[in-house]
Length: 328
Image (tube, rainbow, N blue to C red):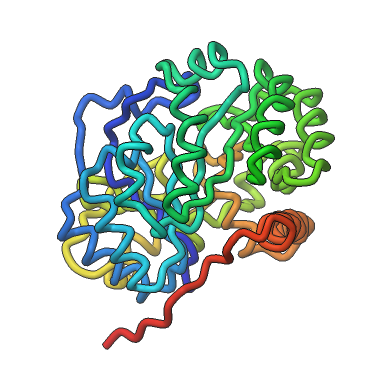
């Protein structure tokens, strides 16, 4: 089985306190060791990964992020980073042309509402970072995590995106320990809003939630088939980050871990654990849809094609390209 996505948690430090995230609560703070990251990038590429998402915490807090991005690009990855923008203007010169899929988190066009959700005063940093990105061949998407409370703020964020010819991504908030807490009315508003030009919503997420999420008797989750998750302490999280019940130290190659009995046991039971019932975590189901052959697959493909058409054809933004790299 060839994997698609490498979720690389390069730090669990964060300079915001988002109300729907608990990473900033973690008491022990780690930054990934650069030597481990370089070695794991090559190893994950051999395992089939074509995308790497450097995440956290706030990934721009890691001093070596530019070096990681350069190595990822050299190795043939399409790169992704999501940031709250608090450090973006300071670090933008180091990131020039290194991030293929850049996401700026913005939850309202009202500064006080955005800052309330993020737990820090960061709205102005997002707005200022849009202009800063243009100087360094970086094209951000505006990532709007919608909740029951802020869905009616989507209009203002859309205006900001439209005025700058940027894509707006609607991302439904998820609860890793419960069924979907968003109301049908909220999802209906998001679905109607997603029909606007320049707005991306993977409608497969809404269909998945409408049917109660993952069901352990007939599991849909393909988190372990599609995604490799590495934590800052150089361990691989099984079966996924949010429900990590086992962490395998990466002592050798990733490929050797993928062949281990422990990994195979977790992969055999992906989506079947008690905590998997009702699961609807976007970042794992998004790549999982590619490993199914059902209506969710086609909904996801259609949404991505629409995103690509608008961003790369209508807005004429560069298409991410991978280098061909041969490993001995």
